[in-house]
Amino acid sequence: MANPLLGIVLGSASDSQHAYTIGKILDELGIPFEVTISSAHRTPEDVVSYSISSKKRGIRAIIAVAGLSAALPGVIAAHTDLPVIGVPVASGSLGGIDALLSITQMPPGVPVASVGINGSKNAAILAARILALIDDNISEKLAIWAEEQKRKVQVSRAELQDLPLVSEEIFTKE
Ligand code: RP5
Image (cartoon, rainbow, N blue to C red):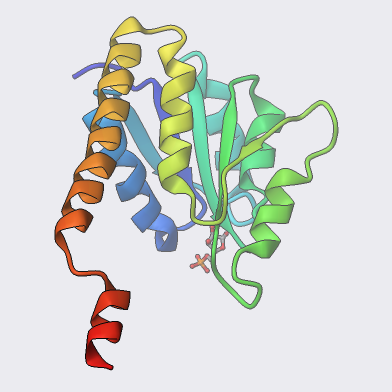
């Protein structure tokens, strides 16, 4: 099995669904990855040691998934110069706005890229685009994947043309 190029860090086991979403896309693109759970607030030492060791172990980008005050992506970015993508999770009273602001409002010099709330699919694709810069195989798979997405939209459009329009049904009833 190939060494992982991408690290996925979840702030909690309750964020696991995002690892599945990300992992599915990475599998499709043939990108080896690893997943861990580590909390910036509950296990800060573990987050630091993971961040410091990642680059030496061959990791080339990190996706950090966290809800609520979501310090995780920022703490990781403070301890590595690898690109870090944050996924703000919709949880708690503020529905993810808290996590989105925490992840995007990093101080100058310690950047974290953020996708939208629950945007784990885009995080996977963005990470793949970063890795594609150093790996032609990933670049080719990404191009094929994008073509497939395009084809799905075109198929949906063609299928729609065969369906009766809702508005037509309404007019028929009158
Ligand atoms: C964050 O708090 C986690 O990333 C999770 O999204 C949220 C709730 O965590 P649990 O209380 O479910 O562990 O740290």
